Length: 322
Image 1 (tube, rainbow, N blue to C red):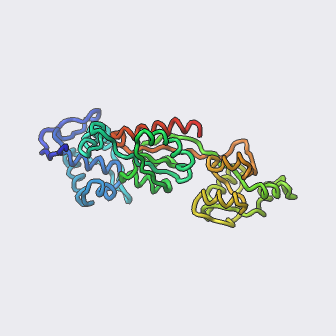
Image 2 (spheres, rainbow, N blue to C red):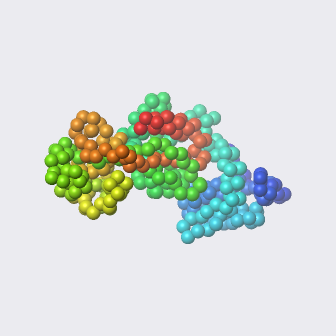
Image 3 (cartoon, one colour):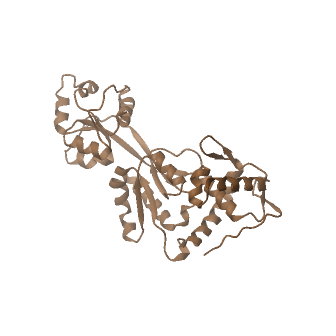
């Protein structure tokens, strides 16, 4: 086990590129606390990651700021914002501390095995696209711990250290979490064939929005986020209808629409098989269908586990065909 001993600051050394001072023998525990706060974005979220109380984290950051003679974080009503010096310091110390942590925890590449990869994202995308793409890695011995949820809670959990990789439907705010575009998800307007026939035979069939007013709307949320966006982007109109059926998730929407409950807007990846076999029908094919960009977000420091890199790389390759 690698033991991180406290060191008493003495002479000062200059951090690269800025002429700012950092003690030559900085306390590794203080630097470890700094990096946790930098990544978590709050003193409170970083405390359980470090096994410390929130007041202790605050005190350690204050001590490090006194040693550097500069403010490292701007205190905000919710969380903290790293200063330019903090960004420079994090870039300088992240890789060495992550390497030490990996060796200390027995999960680094020199330990003969790797830790499980913690991956999270939208449940439907995980089941339809992500997990099938990762089957070869699982067969090769990679361990996965998969979670699902909405983007903001998952990203907050990542800042607290719970996930290595998150697939998010929006780019994370701030600069603490790195992300890359993964794929564009297309959304389609669909119904069961029986409803599609009734819409086509409607006396206002040339006005699809009017014809659909007599078809029940199925959605996963009362505010109809996906359907409203489709109406706004494709038809240039505000949707005035209310949902006839609301269900907990997009799988429920797909099941209800497939059973004939009405129409909805769904990700193509989720319903492509149903379209291929004629169980669902496209009600509209716009020249420019609505797209939503998926982002692959990686927790800083997770690259110390080589399996995280393997999962990241295979997802980026597989997403080219999504």
